[in-house]
Amino acid sequence: MKLNIACPTTGCQKVIEIEDEKKLRAFYEKRISQEVEGEVLGPDFAGYTFKISGGNDKQGFPMMQGVMLHHRTRLLLQKGSKCYRPRKVGERKRKSVRGCIVSHDLAVLNLVVIKQGEKVIEGLTDEKSAKPRRLGPKRANKIKKLFNLGKNDDPRAGIIRRKIVRDGKKDYFKAPKIQRLITPERLQRKLKWKAEKRQRWEKSKAAAKEYNDLVTLRNKEERERRQSYKEKRRSLSRKLSEKKAKAAAGKA
Image 1 (cartoon, one colour):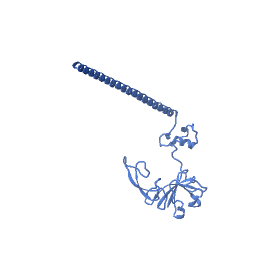
Image 2: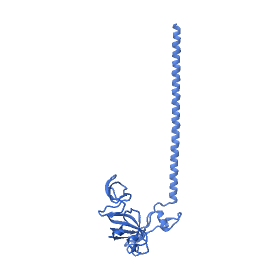
Image 3: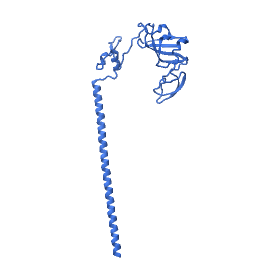
């Protein structure tokens, strides 16, 4: 089995092939995101701690987080699912993926260095092999974390700029647009949105009250009209009955 080890601090990766089954037993029945001590791989990795980040089996099918199996299975995947990229809008597809539990069927197991040991591994944790980050952080909170800035400090002061050199033309600098930057204009805009939302709510509430009052008035007028109609019918019926009674009395 091949172990693809990545070190986030140096940006390097190293692939080592291990054929000794005793060393690989420490990884079996482990799941993605679980940690493994590096001492099981030998004295060179003493003090190191690795986190399992994924892997592929001998046929190239990737491990999928959340699938509690140690073998391959077929899942109906859609947009947003891991291990699948839809080609059409609304497309779903049943694809084969491997569970997140490590087994002997894997060909490559991906590991990430969480804790470094005393010994330096050439090509992985040594300073000579370190690759500088081409781009700096873009999000405001990550810029503050990188430069240890406070809550009220401006992250625009710590932005990383890249110098673009062009032959025969003037050099210039490129810088990322800071995301989730809280500025006075942003706060004022949020207050404006909040005020507009409250105005819409008050307007809707006033319109509903006006409508309910109008419905109550119309119902009252309808009840009064029906009541007056019934009273007219009663008086007309009373007059007719009195007229018939007088006519009967005159005949008698």
